[in-house]
Amino acid sequence: MADVNVLVLVGSLRKASVNRQLAELAVESAPEGVVLRVFDGLGEVPFYNEDIDNEDIDNEDIDGEDIDGEDIDGESVPEPARALRAAAEAADAALVVTPEYNGSIPGVLKNAIDWLSRPWGQSALKDKPLAVVGAALGRYGGKWAHDETRKSFGVAGPRVIDDLELSVPAALLDGRHPRENAEVAGALRAVIEKLAAAVG
Image 1: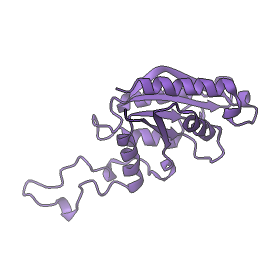
Image 2 (image 1 turned 120 degrees about the vertical axis):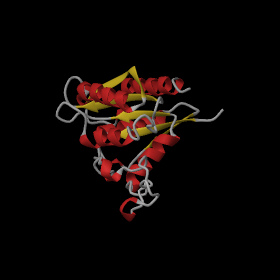
Image 3 (image 1 turned 90 degrees about the vertical axis):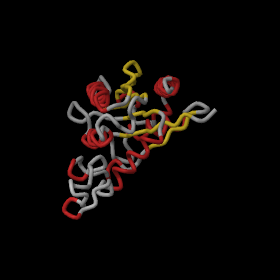
Image 4 (image 1 turned 135 degrees about the horizontal axis):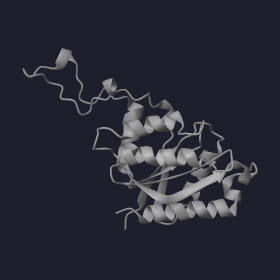
């Protein structure tokens, strides 16, 4: 039986962030038959702009000529955005690991959602199961951002698994890597197992 491939998106660009550590732990603790791959290029994906996202635009006018002599067959889509979509296309499911910025979704993650939502109705993650976890300062561990991320991805096309939740208050980790906290490590592994089971 083929492995279940899970795309991991991290909402923090900081190398030493707790959420990147959670993503590392997710990769390490994946059960047999489940492969998690972290997409490391979110910081290079430009802000979503439909003017440069032309994959679904017909590049010929009524006379069969290129509009303005330009080739708009998708080559105008920036390489980092194409790489993100390709990673999503190759995945069977997605795990989003994100902090909370000012009570909501980090901009880099929201931008990824916008790119992955297009072409509308044909998202590379369409109908694939997706779970959202993460850590943040404060007693609720980023729950507001996690709920907002589920809502936004739910509109964008994936099949969000709402009952797969893990919001970790950063203080619970006491400055240590999440792998050193048995409760967090066990809860994260359980999320991965249930996410993989939702494939198909």
